[in-house]
Image (cartoon, one colour):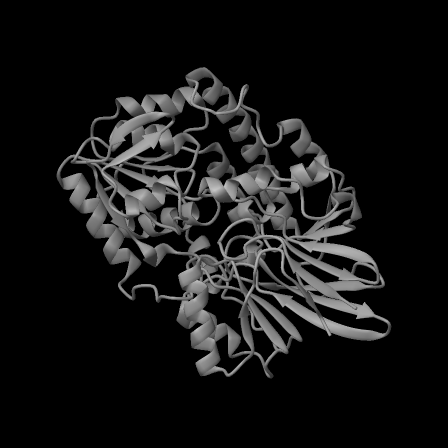
Length: 462
């Protein structure tokens, strides 16, 4: 009998891993890294719950590290099958996984230098060399239409509208002549989001595994343009620097697009805008390359010029160029990864800019528990960054309008496309409050059988 086991993103929003078994074959949907609180991150170092060599395939919904970042470790521990993804996801993974490995090696060296790790010596979870071996396992699958993996499994991808290449995965299991359809939402995007198409409708599923990141709330209806313009003008008016911890994939490109629109409308000054992330620069090139993802509005904007290029944008690829930003004393915008301020160049910018009240930090995405971004969101006045205490006196502004995750209403809107209820719906990729609220909402509104997935729980797909 086919089985489904939740090996990650069950009771939390990171570490997505869903194991499907049929006829003695194993397939893993997503292979994500745990992020956030130490208790979660320690899962990354634990032995994998099943023997990695027993897994024949990995299928990816999208490239974000909490869905792909464990791949090098899985391979290092024995996995030898192909990693199946569409072309855009593969190209993003080349950037994100290499960056993840580089940051882990870099952070291990920094921890050893500063002496703040409890490990002697500090070690990365995986290396750049191990990551290259993982990338060599990738195989491209079509962006749409059915793709036969084996006698037991076939997949069909649908646009999820979350980031470039993001997909809803429809997995068909063929066991003893009986077909069972399991749909994995992955991370669902929002409707009417700049650049990307809306989430595609899916009509049926025997079992549905759905994210619940914002299952307990609705995003503000205020205009993202108005809110961003107010923040930029307020900080610039007092001579401040605006630091934006922005995910290199998706959020950075949306911000560049909206900033350019505001500049063209003369609603904000044309400030120097530093895109201080080599990966984000490369990702922006990919966003412009993969036009199959673009919505009609963005296509029209492209005909008039480059809609992702602010008038005073400065691309800072090298470490020396990044350090030079420290000397900037006049108003500017610094877009830098990572989006939750857990690593990367943005941490150095926060160390320098947070203590100054005239500066402003913009939070434009989900901030997981245990991250510096969540601490700032919760009003922390001091942060520990790279082993040192940093005073947080800068203004902190949260702009959830820029979230790339569907909220409660948008999740319901997508679910209404199903022509019949699934036998069972499982909620994943959400903190306790979000999942519980969505479970209650869907039970009342849809009368579907809904259950919050539990870590390492195995269910039979009857």
